Length: 44
Image (tube, rainbow, N blue to C red; front, side, top):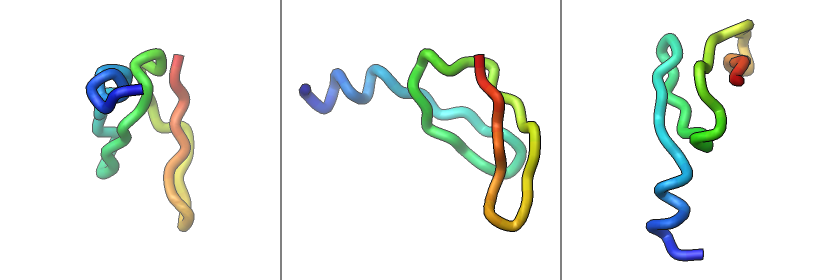
């Protein structure tokens, strides 16, 4: 798969102080928890 095809499948979103790069099928990210190891988000 070419790099441009892969790049078109992802987008970046900021949740709190963190920036996530996720597949476009994951929309409406919202934080559901955080701790010493990182942050947990829900997406639908």
